[in-house]
Image (cartoon, rainbow, N blue to C red; front, side, top):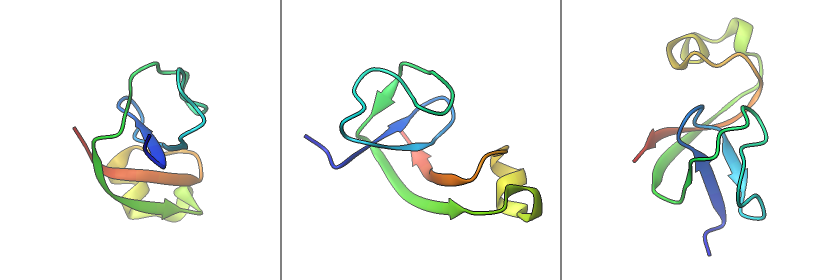
Length: 65
């Protein structure tokens, strides 16, 4: 089993113990197939957060397949 899963909808990185639903958006499409991640602490001040359309602090995958 993977260390972390990523939500295909919001790209939020989840712990592997989350198996069925994203903690952030409630999406049910989680995957082990992702690459790179960014930690966003202050989304209101981050250009990357704006590009990714992230509004909540957290860890987000850069590429989700």
